[in-house]
Length: 176
Image (cartoon, rainbow, N blue to C red; front, side):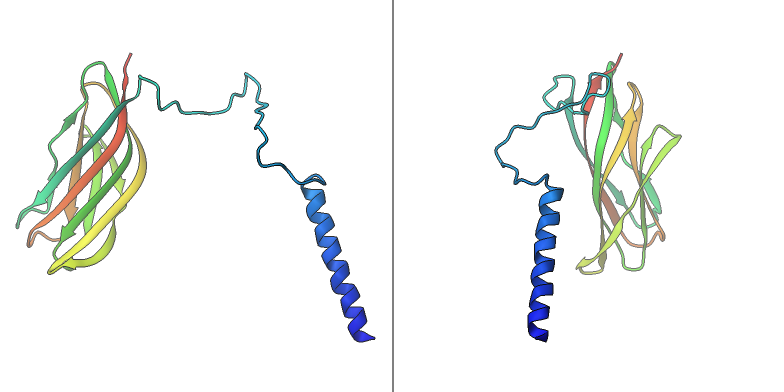
């Protein structure tokens, strides 16, 4: 008798879960090939990004910062935004290498006043006597016409050689 009661409880629970699942879905299965209908009003449009817009002009750049023995920090050569354009940097990644025991701190800079720190992670030792660091991060940095963007690498000790190679992607837009 106990076995029969368990069966009734288990079967009842299964029926209850199935009914609940159907009620959550509106009682019927949804067809996979249905069109999607957007019901937003004109006062609350659906946010979009038109990547085919000719106003977006692709930007890709990389800069290497080499640290010689005795140098604790160094800044890359500048990327100057041309007149009539605004640079929008959307992603920064980097790979760096330092002697074991040293720490790496990097930043994306606009002019001499705006500094955006980039979080780096120690990746391990892949080259003898060199610890590898890496980062890949979305970022939103606006650089106006005539402004300069630079990249800085700072380390905890000035012994041995080190480097940080930055990779930037984004786009230019026409500036008013």
